[in-house]
Image 1 (cartoon, helix red, strand yellow):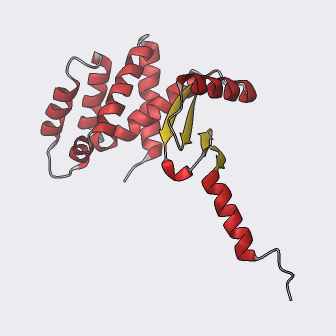
Image 2 (tube, rainbow, N blue to C red):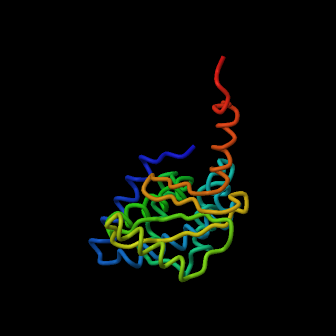
Length: 186
């Protein structure tokens, strides 16, 4: 079970420590690496959350995965999590760290889903337009393809959703026909 409040506190502590040691960018790169590891390997996340595997074995596996790829500060932080029996919260701590870093640096996550692959030029146009309209500092764009949309796009950012897909339009038309608004009610 994830604990976002706890993850936020650990992430805030790591950000403060990294800032104090002038290593914020390096630790951010470490967190991006750990995020990729957690997203790419469900086995790794399951291992972290397993109550059967003892802490020493988890520590050894985390060290093997991160050896030479993370800073000493991140290595010590990972050891702290294991010592406090919080290694199962590592994926949430990593996400919380990245979110807090993005907030500090005024980086906004933008997720666009389309029916076909977007060209790089079109991605840049979308980024520029969203920046301009919302006064964002910088944008981290994630593009996905979902053929079910048929056409159009779905844009998500800062808890906002812009659904301009043909799939949504067809659902709206279906609702109108279900209500039968074209026939006078008797």
